[in-house]
Structure formats: structure tokens, C-alpha cells
Amino acid sequence: MRIALIGGTGNIGEGLAFRLRLAGHDVLIGSRSGEKAKAKAEHFNALVERLGGKRGIEGMTNEKASLIADVCIITIPWKHAFETAENLKENLAGKIVVSPVIPMVVENGIFKYIQPEEGSAGLKFARILDKSRVVVAFNNIPAKRFANPDEVFSWDVAVCSDDEQAKRTVMDIVNSIEGLRAYDAGSLENSRIVESITPLLINIARKNKTRELGIRFV
Image (tube, rainbow, N blue to C red):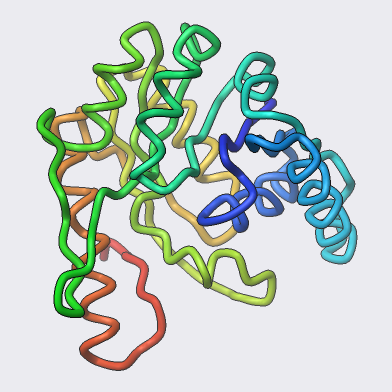
């Protein structure tokens, strides 16, 4: 499966890029700058080879990646993610679009969830991308630990969507990554709960002076 990381040169895209490739997927790194994307793709391919996998990550503009991919994951910080979705709306029509986006801000050292008018980032993407199949996943993954190739983890991923087939496809993608386990978290209405967990995890880690935290359902 060809998976595009829209804005995949930073944020959670760092970990998704090489881990998806190690799981056997063809990965496209998208960026506003095609040259930057190609440089990142080369970096990730070298990492995949070092970890015993095969090269298969390509870098290109967001426009091209969104056009040719089967599944697109929006890995752009929330303040720019919705505008990017608007700009790529036609390219993303009919495709599975995955949102790990968390709208949040820091106030007086505390991370706070900023609920969009629609109810969640996932629901806002569904409004913008009304011809796409929107799925919410990867929201509670601690990005820095996920991007560390030496990190060994066991985390669960809540997956929400109003499209059951798209949800199942994304759950299969999650389960293909070593150390991750997907759970069906229901419809997109539940995405507001899933998204709001992330600032809680960050605040707990900061208050207790621990490393980044993920979630595990037991």
C-alpha cells in the first residue's frame, strides 16, 4: 500500500516514515518543498537499511504525494493542517485521510486541548474533506520516542471513523507497525475524546518528570 505523509518531514512523520517502511508499505514523504522531502526520504531510507529493511521511501511535494497515494496521513502541526487540507481537497477526494492532529496550546506551562467548532480536528477534517474518507488515528503516540529507532514500546492506538471499511484499513496499517495495537474507538464523534487525551498525557509526564507517555488498554 502506498502511504503519503503530508508534511512528513517533521512531527510524528519522523517515526511513521521508517516504521511504515519497515512494515512493508511504500512511503511517500510530502512537503511544501520537494527538495526538502527528497532529502528527508534519503535520510529515512538510510535508516531503514541500517535497521535491516529495504529502501522504498520517496520524497516529493505534498501536491504530488496526495495525488498518487492510496492513504494520506496529515502530519502537519494543527495550526497549518486545516489550510493544507483545503488546498489539497480535490487531490484527496475518495481517499482515506488519517488525522493524528491535536489542536492544543500551552498556557502557564499547562497544555490545553483547543476544541474546534466542529467538535474535534477529525470532525473538522471531515467537514473540509467532504469527499474523502476521514479516519482519526495515531493521536496519542509520543512523537519523540516514536521517532527514536532504538525505542522499544508497546502502545495502543484508538481509531475512529464513520467509514467502517476505511477504519479497518487504518487499523490494519496500525497493527502492521511493531509495538502498536489498534482498537476500534467508534465513530468520529468519539475523536474529541481521543484527541483530548494527548495534552493530559503531556501534562502528567511534565508534572511527574517522566519521559513522554503513550497509552495501553488493559
